[in-house]
Each structure stands twice: as structure tokens, then as C-alpha cells.
Length: 137
Image 1 (tube, rainbow, N blue to C red):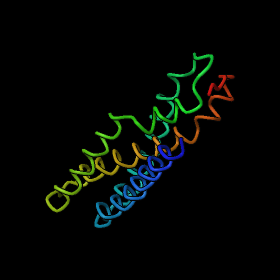
Image 2 (cartoon, helix red, strand yellow):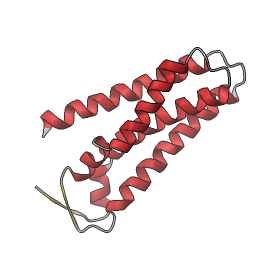
Image 3 (cartoon, rainbow, N blue to C red):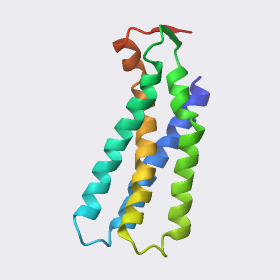
Image 4 (cartoon, rainbow, N blue to C red):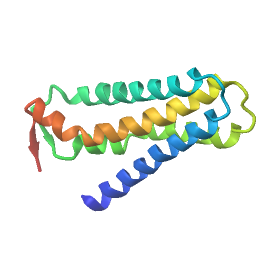
């Protein structure tokens, strides 16, 4: 399993780190403090909401495969497509965008998807223990 899971963890970790860089590049020119700190707080809150909403789908289960929640987060095609859309808009529109709200939105989407994916994958085992879900192998 490590041959499959480790590269995906590394991929999402690189996405997470690049999202921080993306936010720095997009928002470094903004003078208002609100355009720098509020998008970061919003992205972190949305990451927790994404993780919590996605992981609660497994709450009623009595037993799950040991890597089912991890695979759900790491192979989520909707999240990957949304991150890819934010990434492409960053590369294509970076120089053209003048509105700080659009810059913030690109950063929020990228950071919340990548952080929420990592939080969900790392928190899956604790979630299964908390809800008394049996792990099957």
C-alpha cells in the first residue's frame, strides 16, 4: 500500500506547500491587512469544513477497510479537479488579475482543498477509533 499512498501524500503535500507560495505571490502586493490574513483564515476554516463534511459520510459505518477513508481523500477526483482549476487560473491569470478578491479566491480554493485532503487522510484513523469503527484488512 505504501507504494500507492506515499506518492499521493507527497503529491498533496507539494500542492499544500505550493498553495502557500501561491498565496504569497498573489497577495504580497496588497496593502490591506484584510486581504492577507482573512483569506488564510477562511482557507483553513474551509479545509476543516471540507474534511469534517467528507469524513462524516463514514460515521454510520460499523467496519471499514483500513485505507478506505485515506483513499477517499487522496483519490478524490472532484478535489483534484478543483485544485487543478485554481492552479491553472493562477498560472494563466496571475498577471492579468487586478481585483484582490479574485486573487484571494484562487488562494482560498487551492489551500483549502490541499489542506483538507491532508487533514482528512491523516485524521482517518483517529476518526475510526473515536466512532468505534472496526478496521478490516
